[in-house]
Amino acid sequence: MLDERFAWMTSEREVLLHYLNGMRDAVVRVSEGVPEDRQREPGVASGTNLLGLVRHLTWVEQHWFERVFLGEEPGTTDAMIVPAGRSRAEVVAAYRSACARSDDIVRAAPDLGVLAERANPGEAARVPLRAIVTHMIEETARHAGHADILRERIDGATEL
Image (cartoon, rainbow, N blue to C red):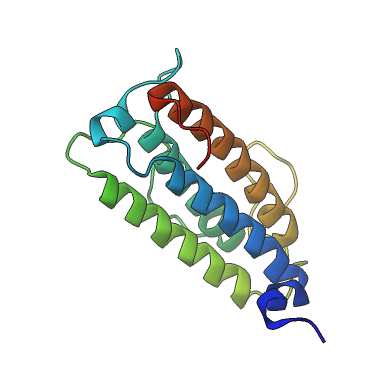
């Protein structure tokens, strides 16, 4: 019998969500304790900043799970620029809300082989939910790495 601490290992769905949520938490954790104005500062020539990454990932969650998988139109736009009037708390809350909605969508599907309602724009085929969740682990991990670098450039922190 599997130790209760590892109950998440009992299904493919829960394993994938476990690792996706770990990456989501990492993206948010990296910006904790950083003054808000520093989170908005471009850390590289492209203009990428900590809060912008969180905002972008909010759009990515909605794009893949709501727009592509469910076929809905969530009405968000992809922008890494956070409006001056939006606080870190608001940006993070919007991200957490999008992630919770995504998790609900994944858990509500009968299985991970269900095909998305539509193909991702620019791609020819609809993909199964399994591919979407796996892509989201990849996408979120990639941006978590970007966030790590941006944080290190801000204050030298590397063990977050």
